[in-house]
Image (cartoon, rainbow, N blue to C red; front, side):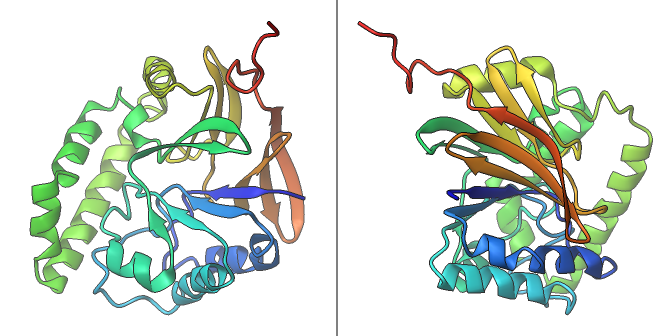
Length: 259
């Protein structure tokens, strides 16, 4: 079966070794995939490619290396937790870093891939913080701080994020409908795929389909892209639950009207 697999929001960390194990359990399937896309927040925190890797996370990175060595194309997009992952790690593990919005064709269908946080435009404080942290100059400064300073800063930012999240409504932290519509029109696609919100689903939007990945706390969540359409799955204890499916939406690009 031809299949491209898309993941997001694993939030790998020391106190959640079960998430690493859920990823390792997918190895046989991943080795058969046409490609693997990771749409950010692969790890809970990443302060730089020079930082020591916690032992519970190392097996997940080793898996990525095995996949790339086996010839599986690996494509990685930054999330809000791991935007400091750089070319050094990409080269070491064999994956390609993608821009914040990546427009491509999957089995002949135009698709836009992104982490998803930029679509949450109702959360103005978050968007302001994101613009600051992701500014090239700020990233340059952060990357040249001493490792201990970066680790302390990351811990402080995580704590602030938890406090802020607890004070925000679920509506504010979800995507903005107009932002979704604008993105699909701007990039000329009728399929948009993202993570970040931890609300796995396939939505029918005005301009096509929006597929949302989920977090991995209660099982691995993956989006299987096939020549016939999309399948959103949750895998827990070797049992697969199909969360949603959808055929590719009609596209004049791929199905031109008869002359």
